[in-house]
Length: 276
Image (cartoon, rainbow, N blue to C red; front, side, top):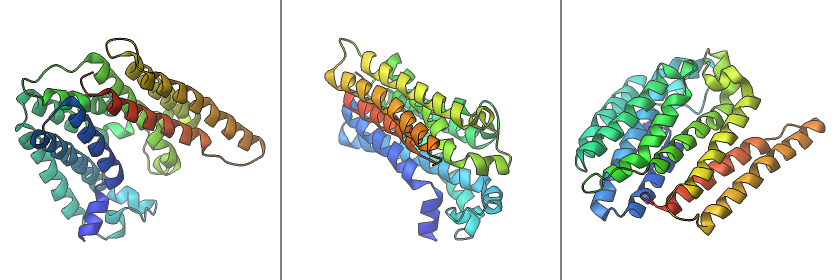
């Protein structure tokens, strides 16, 4: 049951976000102990969001035969997952307070925003807002957790929000059909797959520009290289996808190019440091 409970927490994206937060904490100059607190706080938010998602979506996941969902398959009970989500959510402000009060408030905002996505905003035209708020708050939390709670630079918060918005559109694309079958009609579902790919690309490219030119001083060679790579990856993905469609074949190249830009943004975010 432990393995099933872990899988119900959505470990892949949760651990990815946690790892990025740990790298940001190191880049911001957190000592090891405080960096561990920052990382543990973010890990708790990710676990709470993942578990609450599977708790809420248990019936929907069963109806579409999601055998990758432990609650839907009966590998772990819905009650156990719900209790785990509640405990993790309550732990977030408690752990965060060991850094600074503003940091604890910021990460709590990120958590509440993400939980509001799970219910009810996922099914509304405002589904992108929690991603923008929560991802923007994440690097802000890392900076606010420093001694004296310095204000995070605006470019950092904006870049985080743009990455979050782009991630929402990209993340929903593979599940559009299943979501529509079960009545989920967030913003990506309302505008369709093609428009969602464009939205993801624009938002993520905007994040790349912000990360390259936002920090004080001239842009670094890393920022310029990242911007060039992102600008090349997106049209390349579209061209490959169109060529495949012309031959009557389905291609994931456009989706993968969006994911590639998201990864470029994350690398650039970490390489630039949290305070910049």
